[in-house]
Length: 242
Image 1 (cartoon, rainbow, N blue to C red):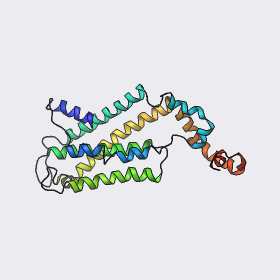
Image 2: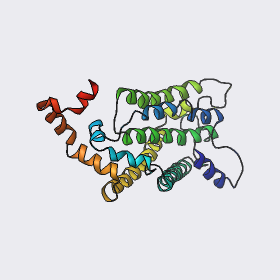
Image 3: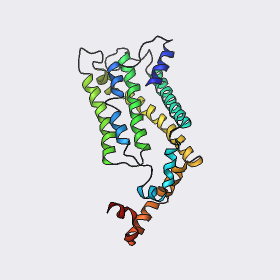
Image 4: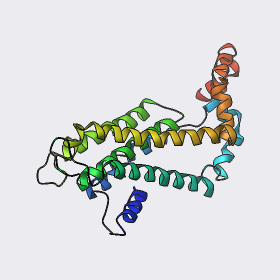
């Protein structure tokens, strides 16, 4: 959202006006993303037995290899690229000549930012889901529940006549261009993200990714539990639970 605001200020020649509605801006880090972030703490990169068998893997986190200057800049770069894509496509499609097909009115401020906002939320939801290694029912509830909750909130928010957001979402929901724009922005951003992640995973994998490939792709976890079923006395996880 911050990069979108910076881009908007460049586009409007440093007008200083906010691209986002104050209510929606406050909801981003509160209602619409905080639950998925807390659900993500339940994620595990690797199965428990792999961590027990390879305690040296904890060095990857302890030595700050998971979050350092390089990874931080990667996150910043990804956010900037996604903001550029969403802002460019939104402004390009919903320019000054766009008219609402049902009312004939020009595209207003609230309607334009809603397109970008909805696309960014779809991107955030897809990113959390794709990058999760361990999807539990709590993760599903947090990810998809928050996604559905957003659409319910904006629909309720747009029914009050005294607000400037009145009927903004109603006009969007009957317009197929809105769905197409959000879908295209989300798809383009996620395709680039997945392509970059696949390149790094296959060409420059880190220690955890190499072990993840061994456990998931080569089915090492399934083989371990099959072996434990035939040798219960050697099952370290069972002995720990006992």
